[in-house]
Image 1 (tube, rainbow, N blue to C red):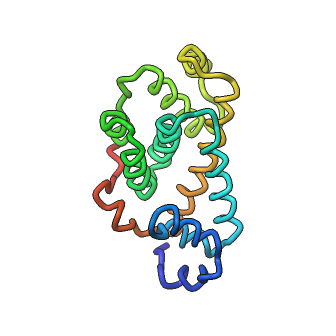
Image 2 (tube, rainbow, N blue to C red):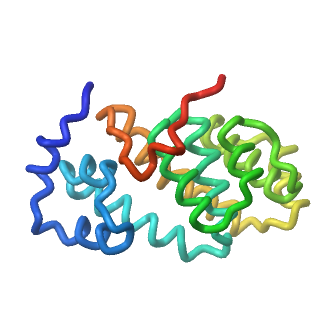
Length: 183
């Protein structure tokens, strides 16, 4: 399927308050949200779950690790570019971002345990290996934080799948971080 911005912009009329909220937050309306607006409840769900994920005990770097690890495993070029850009804006270390983009281990052991856990939650459909769960806990994460990872994986999977199905065009602000799956 090919994404037609004209079609979704028509579906996403100016009276959609969530798109106005996104414009205020980002300075533009990302194509992902315009695409999702064709199914208003998907847009509402995605933005609501995203706001809730932002309120978890995971710090901004940890949240971006979850979102990028999920997007990597789901091979979502749009979300890898978008979250690489957002992570950089949030001050995430360049080495962490590059590791996540390439599928390489993160030098920081705690973040690497989080990356591995989020990756396995994604690829193994909620059944991470016992050793991965143990490493996650040994790194200092709690069972509550394991469930917060599930929240982030679920939120990001919504957008990964929507982008795959609709062929969402990468926004100009995200183009410098364009990504293709290295596997």
